Image (cartoon, rainbow, N blue to C red; front, side, top):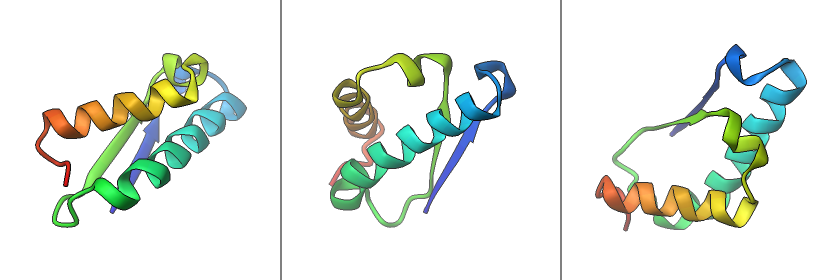
Length: 72
């Protein structure tokens, strides 16, 4: 299970939705194959989530999962 949260500090509703959609797309591509099913995940959107290159965003997610020993 994956939860997504983006604070109002990130921006208006449209900006927050864009950040959430980017997180969902990255999670779908990375976590479908590599997330350990016994864990629950919460992805937090920041201001940089919107501006970050999508490939770099996926790489960040991969590195974070490896650092947390959630990679399979």
